[in-house]
Length: 298
Picture 1: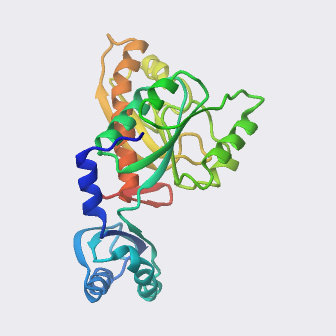
Picture 2 (picture 1 turned 135 degrees about the vertical axis):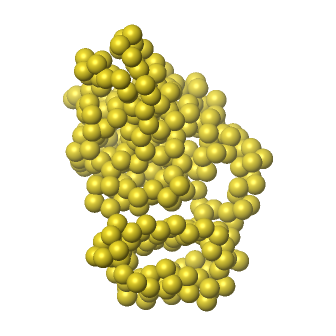
């Protein structure tokens, strides 16, 4: 039985008539005025508005709005239809969402549990406003922990020879049930075939401060290089290994006294916090992707 806190229930009440809009378009005068006028004419109350211009003269413009409107669930499609004319005139790439609609997550994990447990704790506390539909692992190690939260756990072993079959099984499990996938230290490379089903919807945590130390054993790479800072990076997954749009990063100072095991211990804390932040921002529609970068409104 999935548990929910009083805090989470309160958030659900607040979200019932709240919507979110994300906009990216070529920058030009009048965008904010047009959007604000639209919501005013619909009797919607804008409760938060953030915008960013890459370059006021010929650059891109990004905007995120949260608004309240009575009976929003029944009016959303009509709002989208009416906004279409404005969007077309400004050449907008845009989306509008119900804040009350929780994103449905699948978490993929291997043997290490720290990133997974952070997400489960934040979900249980109501800080992560999403539904964790399942956890999929290529090991059985965390079944008991996951099922204690009332979340289904699926064991799908992966070898070099069975990788294609394993990914097909993953797609069968998540198809129609999940819209975001979290790689919480899932130590497998995702194929282009799999990625095409979830563009900018797969979030990975890499245990280094990218673009430094791409690929395997980054803590050993960092130790051999004698770095004084180590970090972690949460990013969307693309075909380029560890090269997708970066969502969040953090670092911590280390010294010559720290061996590889100490770097791993220190790094686990950074990894769990960075991934949890990135997932939270994703489910709250705070991220806009442009080329290979992100604009994150927090």
